[in-house]
Length: 243
Image (tube, rainbow, N blue to C red):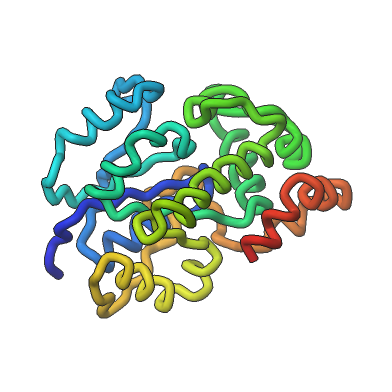
């Protein structure tokens, strides 16, 4: 497999299949998903400075770095650097059904020893909680609850991918990658001008923090009727739009 000539960036809200996509890119297109290039606090960057972000990325200007750039940041952080980011990187935004995202995120946070986000007894309480803790580094504005935080993240990136940056930011639906893997990988290959040959599926738990079961119906076993209604009220229209 020939090494990629253009860098790759994977963007997502937490618990949306980030490493599933990264590992898929590594197995099928010659990228490196471990170690990945983590655009997070360890860089020491002032993420509220667009100039600092671009200056940091320019350290690898026109270099075919195989390590995948990973970020969970809201698109607002890149509002003045998307031209450069999409010029230098194949940018993929992966999103997942928020009901599964909430369940996975809730479980993960409960298992952490530090304050990364709301720790609640039930996933219903988690969805209704205001964002708090370490996860707030990925957002510029506060949301009324965790579902609205997810909504803002997805809508923000989708607006760019469907607008000015159409064809430069590529959208991947987790459920498509999970259930229609080969077809989705072929489409990903087309987006970067490469053929996907001898397609391989990565192990579901590779590089994943607190890996789940990879199911798409788990929320149905733990949501109350009130939880289902809350999801409908908060993001139901977006779910219809996303299909």
